Length: 127
Image (cartoon, rainbow, N blue to C red; front, side, top):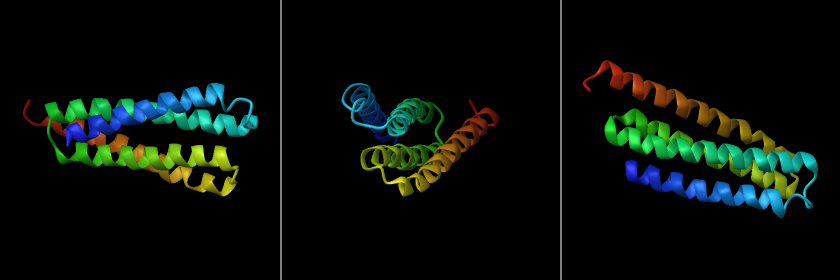
């Protein structure tokens, strides 16, 4: 599973860098300032959680436990929902898509809580 999360994290990092570059260059003149800000937020949080998945993959290979897997899938779902909804909102201007963003954000937050719990379990358990 750690290889899966590492591969997904690396893929999300690739997409995040591409989305950031696209927003900084091609989208700057095509999107309204508020939509460009949404695009940039999606790229930024996508990159944050791509890095989180890479670190998580390393952590779970060092300290096994099912909570790492839970955390990883929450990061994947959260990234897709959070960043994906912001990218789609920016491209389409359909504001109702903004209702999906907090669901993604909640997944990301729960992913961090699961990571805390996984790490804490390993602090309390054998080294």
